[in-house]
Amino acid sequence: MLKKILIGLAILFVAIQFYRPARNISSGPASNNIGNAYAVPEDVNAILTKACNDCHSNNTVYPWYASIQPVAAWLDHHVDEGKGELNFDEFLTYKPRKAHHKMEEVNEMVKEGEMPLDSYTWIHKDAVLTEAEKLALANWSVAVMDTIAKQYPEVLIPQKR
Image (cartoon, rainbow, N blue to C red; front, side, top):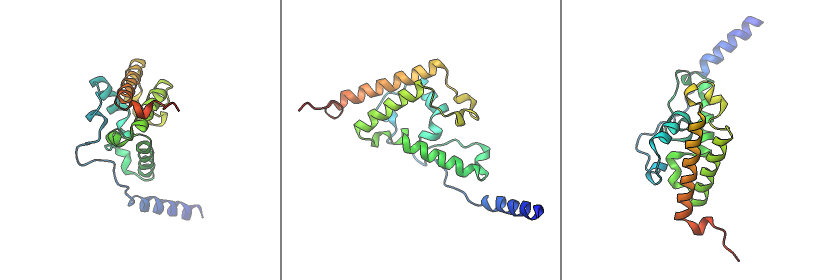
C-alpha cells in the first residue's frame, strides 16, 4: 500500500511540473515607473533593486528553484500579491491620494522591519536592510510624499466646510 502511495505521489510531482505560470518579466520599458516622475537616488535604486523589485515591479529575477513546482506556483502567488499592494513600475498610474498612501506605507513598513518579508530575506540574504538602508528608503519615501503633496494639495489636504 505504501509503495502505491509513493508511486502516486511521484507521478503527481512529475505531472505538476508541466504547469508553468507566466513569469513576471516585462518586455518593454516601464513608462509608468516611479523614477519617471520622482527622483530615485542611486543608493535608493540599489536598495529597491536588491530588496523590493522582485515582488514590487514588473520584473522579477527568478532563482533556479522557481522552475520546480509547487515552489513556482507559490512564488507566482507571492509576486502577484506584492504587485497588488505596490508596483513601482505602475506607480504613475496611481491617483495622487493612493500614491501618497503607498509611500506612507513604504515608510512605515521599512521602519518597522516588516519589509522586505522574512520569507524573502531567508533566501535572499543580500536583501536584509541595514539601518542606514532603512533610513535612506524611509527618507526617500517621505521626499516622494512631500513632492506629491506639493503637486496635488487640493487632493491631499482635507477641505474645510
